[in-house]
Amino acid sequence: MKTFASDNYSGVHPEIMEALVKANHHHAGSYGSDDYTARATDKFKGLFGEDIEVFFVYNGTGANVLGLSALTNSYNSILCAESAHINVDESTAPEKFTGCKLVTISSADGKITAQQVEQKIQRIDDQHHPQAKVISISQSSEYGTVYTVEEVKALSAVARKHNLYVHMDGSRIANAAVSLNKPFREFTKDAGVDVLSFGGTKNGLMFGEAILFFKPELARNFKFIRKQGMQLNSKMRFISAQFEALLSHDLWKRNATQTNRLAQLLDKGLRQIPQVKVTQKVEGNGVFVIMPPQIIPLLQNEFPFYSWNDQLNEVRLMCSWDTTEEEINRFIELVRTYLGQG
Ligand SMILES: Cc1ncc(COP(=O)(O)O)c(C=O)c1O
Image (tube, rainbow, N blue to C red):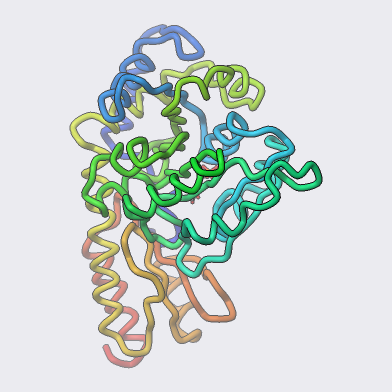
């Protein structure tokens, strides 16, 4: 059964599986001292420039939490959207590992603005107050929206002005790059981002994320932070071989292009049905929709998906790299049928 539940529900892309199988035929150095890790690191340097530091970890929570740990002391605060994964879906791992307070900013579309952030940076140097140190943004956001280059630059300018850092949760960064039709570095490193969690799992990997430091000095102690944070994989080649494949032959782009295109198709089809309402701009691979409540369980029987807001009858439909056009058409047809228009 295919689903619109999450881009984590899909399996492993065949080219990634092939890379894993190939990496399984011999011995290789452990803890990252292997050729796969060197080559995957070079791939990232090809995309972002030579002057970066790259670390591979198991999952997105690990990437976010450890990246943030490298930027903060426990008396700091981290500013983020109320809907940020670090705020709502990482239990209290960010608080436990960084010791920091998360200061949240309300947002209707998952994005925060430079102006909102500026208002939250208060009482700097006041010993009684949490000291703001990082602005963390998700690209694409938890609502499937995408920050423009100018929006990222504006947030970075506020960060620089107040001596803060910018962290980007890029668990869906490939979807954002395709949506913006820009090279990764233009809306990350070149736009003032300091640390990036570069997602792999949602874009076809079995598991694995990368943490990229755009100022090498910020990564000075990171090897200890990663080990202390239990994210150092002894058989590292099985993460890095996947990234090598993802960043070869444009696999990341092929997957994200297909995923975004199908989300657009779903958006277009649903917008033509008067009884349903698409609530967010569809810029990545998620479509948020308010539907008559009686049809939700009927649709879920065929294509499981999650409710997003029970009070509003708003649901989240996520496309994955393996979603097909037939599935999108079938879903739209089912919505029409259950609404008596079929
Ligand atoms: C915005 C965002 N960041 C990070 C993650 C990664 O989380 P995990 O620790 O489950 O890999 C997710 C996964 O759902 C996510 O949606």
